[in-house]
Length: 618
Image 1 (tube, rainbow, N blue to C red):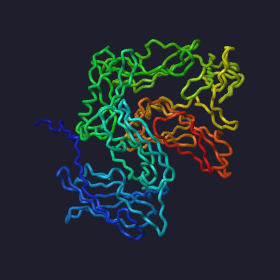
Image 2: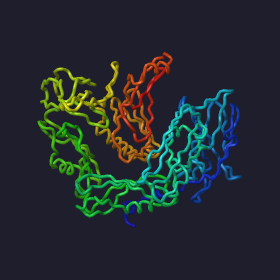
Image 3: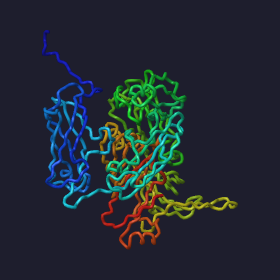
Image 4: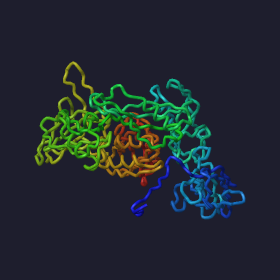
């Protein structure tokens, strides 16, 4: 060849095939036994090369301490494994010294082929994810066995083929390795509501069998147990524009035989087309948000995410935030418009700005939309989401009475110019005296939109009908926190978008810490991004932390959730508090959210200076 230096090639590995060795057996001579300082533990691992390559001369495994109150650098013991040509097995030894007195379990085993590349990393083997290889390290008589608060939820398919929660059980001070039977958890009786399926047992989200003998480990302190049927069931979510311009979501179950491939499952699911899908352009296919190869064997449970694709166009979805005719601060739904394939974000934003304006609160002067999106030069993707926030030249002052999480309440408004001094409203038609959560001054200067929240009894204007007093949850006289959701309780749109993108790109098992500060509402978009994924969201708020795992998010209709904890409440009778606390300092707290969260969530409160923390759940 002439000019050889001008040519090159790229070698790409087929990512659908793994050349990792397969671990065939593990032997630990003192498995599950008590060991003490000075003793040794022998480990033997057998492995086979799946590609015919020669096994590497060495490997390794890690023992991790089950106790949580030790430094991370002292909670891990690495054991080097060396391949013995005599028996073609890996051997290693752990010397028991400087190890915290608690359970130490094998968390992972790593065996390479010669030359590196893929490696076998497997702690469960054929026994599920129960860490079957462990030792109990004693230091004299000292041994620390962790205890957990265990929350078990049972799920079964409903008539629509969606998993729904049917039972919840909570247990406190459960020692590690206690079984569900030993802590008194009984399995509910289930009749198969979804036509054509028969229940054959119970499983966790990963498909591992769960029985009365399943042990409680730290990672199962929140255990979601799902009914297992004679066929597997995945939930398919279909996003599409309907014939009226709304952006819709539909859910359908997809059943399959165990051992079936991911590619076959997707083909089955793509046969569904909603009746109300838009006919403006010919429907082409469902774009799959795939994260598995077609040849992969399907796990027992999972989710498929599809977006409708149409010939020659992409549909984008948008949501508009503005003050509507009643003074409500939210839009009325998610809508869609078609754009030509290849349209960039800047042109899409121009199209959104040219849409007819919705009806807004009388007296407000609309200026422009602030639109959150990707870079202006990026090509618009099918199904891309845009959030439009209205900017006004003047301001709206709102007084909202009897607001709850489920009901908007009654809104009274004043329109004011920026810098204008206004007099606060003091009487409201149809209501008596108001108790304010954030009381307005008698007069105040308006430079931005403002909202005041209060509670009041309704007064009937019809003399033939008695008044119906409302029953708001009022804060105690010494309350240090507002008893209603604050107007700035949501993270900024840009922060939500960043979190959603990060979760969408997450690897299984990742943990994300989200610093909420004074913000208390976790957005629907974040929950939707995490739903069905093995990712953990740790929401750090002002003095407390919420922890949610995506695999536990099962609700089909997700909404924003206010996770605010109201401190210094007085919902529990004083006599009960004194009896429980024995006279020690106490603080009562109440959750702002009313009703079911839709998924298990763990609350950790900073109560370092209190002996008792009492919660009232509404």
